Amino acid sequence: MNKIIVLAFLLMPVTLVFTNGKDSVKENPIQSSSLQKSKAAGEKVYKKFCISCHQADGGGVPHLTPPLINTSYVLGDKETMIKILLNGLKNVDIDEESYSNPMPPLGSVLKDQQIADVLTYVRNTFGNKAAVVTVAEVKEVRSKIKK
Ligand code: HEC
Image (cartoon, rainbow, N blue to C red; front, side, top):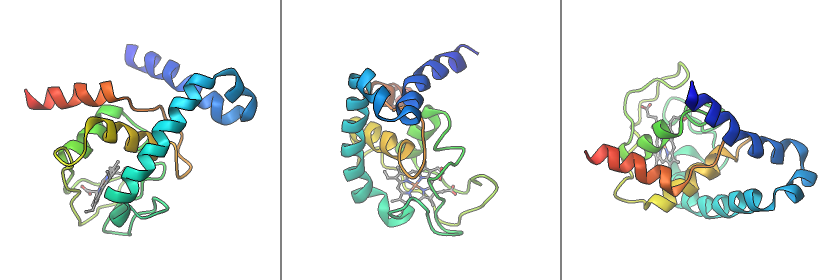
């Protein structure tokens, strides 16, 4: 329950920035500039490490690679998404579709900052709107996995 409240508060400024356009960007310059910075860095990571499978428009490839547009994973719990990047994913149905390709683990390829940036990019591109992912959150999930 607490988590939901915290998440709602985290999402609020982001939602405001997007729904109110330029006015609220002016009101909240720090939030929006850190989002823009992380998105820009994340776009580079996406083009290097994700685009070959998930495609430039995030649409994926039918029956092979799932889309990154409004899926329950992309808009959902950050920890689950971070884990998918660190450990990969195999034989899991995504929003009732099955995909025959596996997603490779990228935990040893990507740094925590790159994971935070690419997830922030994906969660705020392709029509998605979800809270930013921070490097501290990636570090926490990585340390839990190591134990
Ligand atoms: C080699 C191809 C490949 C690459 C590279 C790849 N993925 Fe995936 N990804 C997949 C496949 C296949 C699945 C689904 C696996 C399954 O069905 O169990 C998936 C699943 C996902 C999911 C969860 C399902 C969804 O669509 O919401 C997310 C989020 C995701 N990938 C993000 C990324 C990001 C971000 C990158 C780049 C850092 C990336 N992937 C790189 C193939 C890939």
